[in-house]
Amino acid sequence: MRSSKSLPLEQVAFDWETPALVAGVDEAGRGPLAGPVVAAAVILDERQPIAGLADSKKLSAARREALYDEIRAKALCCCVAQASVEEIDRLNILQATLLAMQRAVAGLRLKPGLVLVDGNRLPLLEMRAEAIVKGDAKVAAISAASILAKVTRDRGLELLDQHYPQYGFARHKGYGTAEHLQALRLHGPCPEHRRSFAPVAQAERSPLGINPFHAVAIATLIT
Image 1 (cartoon, rainbow, N blue to C red):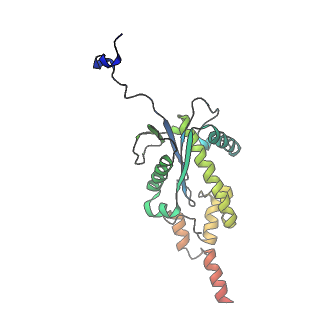
Image 2 (cartoon, rainbow, N blue to C red):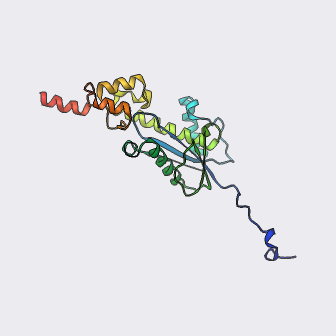
Image 3 (cartoon, rainbow, N blue to C red):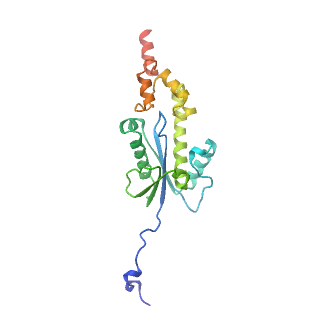
């Protein structure tokens, strides 16, 4: 029997397209006026499928929470990362979002051979990556990433609400609702507001806006 060493070269060619680990990446928090932008990267385990994965925005909060726990329990690995308010204001929201995505992929315990990213822009990565518009509704790993990112950010805004209850962060999660805009006009921005976003910058310049920290100093001077 001939050994494999004597086989012609054409018979031992490799398939360079052999599927490798695939990571899905998505973000939460590009649009809000406050708080960090959060990204997640997830590599799912095909042997442990997760039913009901979908775009996180189309799921109820209770369903997202349940899926969050299941994803963390069944995924091969996952990582959640963020870009801070300071980075958002310094870099702009798009670049900060890509930075958060880059950090999430870099934090994975296993190195993926392919990264699928929701949207039409890609972070700078060392492995092959593809952008998929509406990927959170098409690719299970991206759906999982969207859920991890959304739940993580929502939990963070609920904690932020405990420090700044006057803004209603637990209810609107930092988005520019009528309630939030009214609170900005009344109290001015807090340290977790994004100064590079127009409604926040306008509230900071407005004579009606009162920074709650400055208000303490003013009250001290008056008394």
